[in-house]
Length: 283
Image (tube, rainbow, N blue to C red):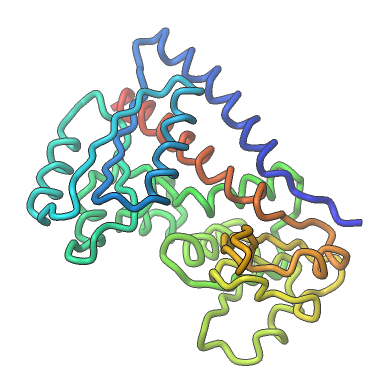
């Protein structure tokens, strides 16, 4: 029987430890604070922002939201980021995506001070990750690594296959696995004979956004399967990128959807905000 990796439980434990740490920091006069910028009124973004605000409340991190309307210009967005960069009491800045199509999200991410870039999207943080230096790492991949660590899953020397090459999950996760001494293969939409590659994976990560893409014939016996996908099926039910019911019996460890990687993303965001507050205070 596979061990089901419980992301909800682990995220609660991370938040509990952060709460203790934040209480200690406050005694030293350090008050971690996160600023979230939301442009437009995307309903799922509003839910994500609300969840982030709740997590901040629970841990004792201050939270401030900046709502910009759909018609906001690039100049206005960059000017707000510039202002937040300069505010000493704000430790982390997060731009909630997606943003309206007329705005350049890459330019906006690049404008955020890399020392406040708690999403890990700034080129300096991406560069630090690729050369193995300490910086801020994208929250979902960081959450995946935390799960592997928490469940004592050996990464060093293992064959790891990541399906998906997004800048937010696939690429940084492949880099983290490589930094942890795994042998890493990245598969994507142009990869041929994908099942031949995934069948050799000791650790298989699905992060491509296609419901039930990974089927049991793609997974080797005893593999560790991490499902990063969050999709809605025809019935409106949340499903992952892995066909859980059929794949689970073959695995040694597997993450469910929901309740797997999802809760870890926000827990790692909170971890990054606390880290930013400490680094800025020490400097």
